[in-house]
Amino acid sequence: MYPKSLQELIEAFRKLPGVGEKSAERYALNITDMQEEDVRRFAQALVDVKTKLRQCKICGNLSEEDECEICKDTSRNAKQIVVVQSAKDVLAMERLEEFNGTYHVLNGLLSSSKGIMPEDLNIDTLIKRAQEAEEIILATSTTMDGEMTALYLNKILKKECPSVLVTRIAHGLPSGGFLDYADEMTLAHALSGRRKVEE
Amino acid sequence: MYPKSLQELIEAFRKLPGVGEKSAERYALNITDMQEEDVRRFAQALVDVKTKLRQCKICGNLSEEDECEICKDTSRNAKQIVVVQSAKDVLAMERLEEFNGTYHVLNGLLSSSKGIMPEDLNIDTLIKRAQEAEEIILATSTTMDGEMTALYLNKILKKECPSVLVTRIAHGLPSGGFLDYADEMTLAHALSGRRKVEE
Figure 1 (cartoon, each protein chain N blue to C red):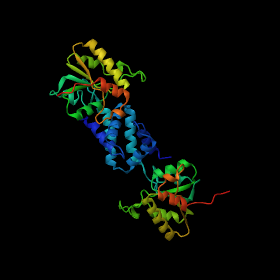
Figure 2: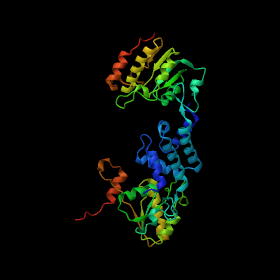
Figure 3: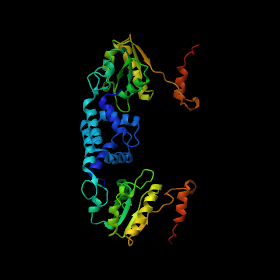
């Protein structure tokens, strides 16, 4: 019913995660109101992201060069490696401005339901890097797949690099969380992960 | 923190209505996972929408040609014209598959707060079309600006084309609506707009 070009743009927007018919329509109609220069810049940004970005050869993070900014930064501690699911998690960690080590981006999680196997993830390169590392911090999500992936990585790292310290990020009550709203799993982890209160 | 091309794409997505930082990030990261061909098609669709689409010379609807599909369709009743705010409303009406007349897209509503005046809207062309029409159905929204616009159009149409029938879409309780949840304005309209029950 819409003109062909508009229909095609609506379909393109619909392919984005969580975008339904109504939102896609709103976005596409909004494009007709934008300045042509801004629309061309948007189109160019799409193509640039797809053609210029690749995975950092060392850590798997997104980068426009062979090695990402973090891996190239010699002031960072390459012996401490936080293992995350995606490039987005790197950004979340970097926002803290507390961590001065490096990252390893798996680009996914093991999943029996989705059929994602170890060879589908950046695990080989992690094992190579672990030979030189002091600590591997497993920071995959605390979901079923995240926990499974952490368990698997712990097992294989213990086997391949027995000298490296493998840790897991803490799992417990979030800040501002109420006990009576927490699910049982969270509460059980919060209890089992308790620490001595420092004086 | 993200590579430059990714940052630019995030900013482009952020300009879409209702898209915040988190969604823009998710959309942009999703582009890195898409097939290059799909991304190029997306980029082309953006540019096409901006460069190929224009307003139908007759009704103001979006079209790739001088006249839109609806205005060109001689099986439709050009003497009955539904006046709407935007091209999106045309689609909503067309989905009903009940109306066989034509449309007139104002491309906005009069608004004293936003400073939108009659000369900013497709009103001149409506008055010209009204000379040949039998009925003008004012289907602007039942918001303050929509009502103001309908009042204004009624006044000017009565003056310029006294022979045309000007009607307003019904304003009342929506389907599935409960009386006790309806706001006073809706309820007042539902009452004043009551109709005799047909046997």
